[in-house]
Image 1 (cartoon, rainbow, N blue to C red):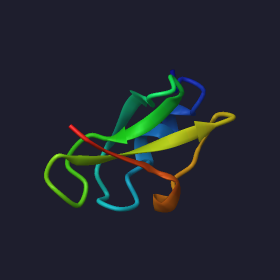
Image 2 (tube, rainbow, N blue to C red):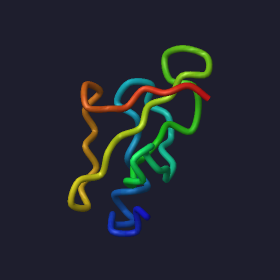
Image 3 (cartoon, helix red, strand yellow):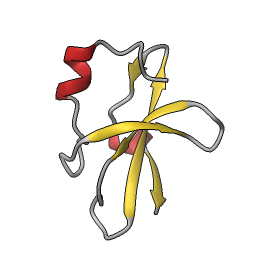
Length: 68
């Protein structure tokens, strides 16, 4: 789903909150997003960053916070 993001950029992107690795994910509405691969700030909490027009929105205020 996030294939439109260039590979070199995809490799260096990290969560701006926890600096963790980001993986491909899907938001509840079915849209593609990048998600923290591990806990972000609290145990079991993660963030999902939306992808708009092929550009990941890496703003903590725009992220979807969810639990696993």
